[in-house]
Structures are given as C-alpha cells and as structure tokens.
Image 1 (cartoon, rainbow, N blue to C red):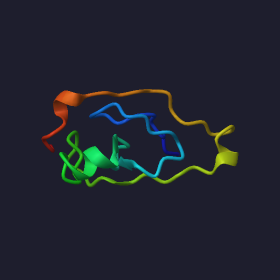
Image 2 (cartoon, one colour):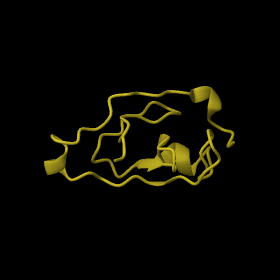
Image 3 (tube, rainbow, N blue to C red):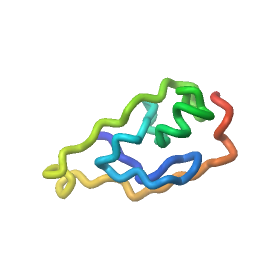
Image 4 (spheres, rainbow, N blue to C red):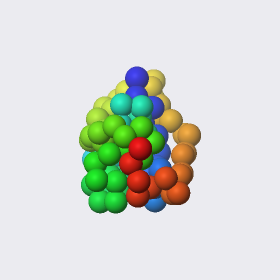
Length: 82
C-alpha cells in the first residue's frame, strides 16, 4: 500500500491524498508536479527513477488506510537527479 506522503520533498508544498499534482518514484519519494516536471526533469533526485502521477486513494478507504504523516523535506537534493 502506498504511503501517500503529505508534501513535496523539494518545495514542501502540501500534497493531500486526493491531489492530482503528486508525483512518485518506485521508492515512493514524493514531489509536486511543478518540481517533478521542472527542476527534476521527471527523475527522482534520490534514486534516479522515473517520477509518475501518484494514484488517488478513494475517500471511503482513507479511514481504514490513512495517508502517511511523515513529511520529508530535502531541498538540497533537488535540482540533481541521482
């Protein structure tokens, strides 16, 4: 099950579980579409993997399967893909 992390690792923008602006890699590193498509060029700066649209968890499933509250902010890694 995806963690659905709450924010962009680059700019710390809020990314709620229903956001269509969230992008993830296969390790679930999470970025907003602005950072992912812009400065990161579609590549995760942590692993070098492709950043794709994060699926939206249906609202009726969020109570049983809540999103993560772990916020990761690593602005120093942004701008360079691994």
